[in-house]
Image (tube, rainbow, N blue to C red):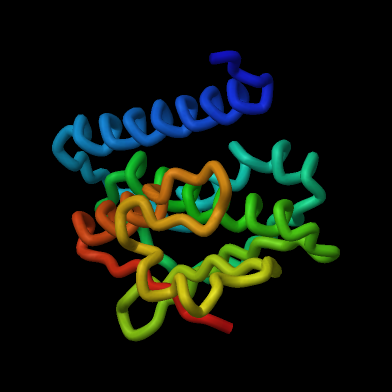
Length: 171
């Protein structure tokens, strides 16, 4: 049987998706013990923004910082928190680009509220469809073509390992 070019492209795309899923699972499974050092969450977020700013600019996505200067340094596993914020920022960027949003903005804000640090990541994207909201933190749940469905699952697991919560609040 002769395979068409379109069939081969589908096979290649799915193979790449499988590869990405396996890589994400291996990264998650191989994580070593948490190494906490005194760090400021605002600075951790800033490092993620700086690392991704060029790609966001190329996609016409504005990165907004709204940090509470009262946020203190606390013991953090910096690399794990960076992974969480990279996943959230990437999801926001991809959703806005895929939906061809006219205004593309991701706002990272931090607040010190009653001794707790609250971080919000807000975007101007189309939002998560109501039918997907209950499952977004489940492994392999994705609403995006080519998505692995592991980013939010891994991010929530990393938050829980660090005694934090990751929640979605619809607009």
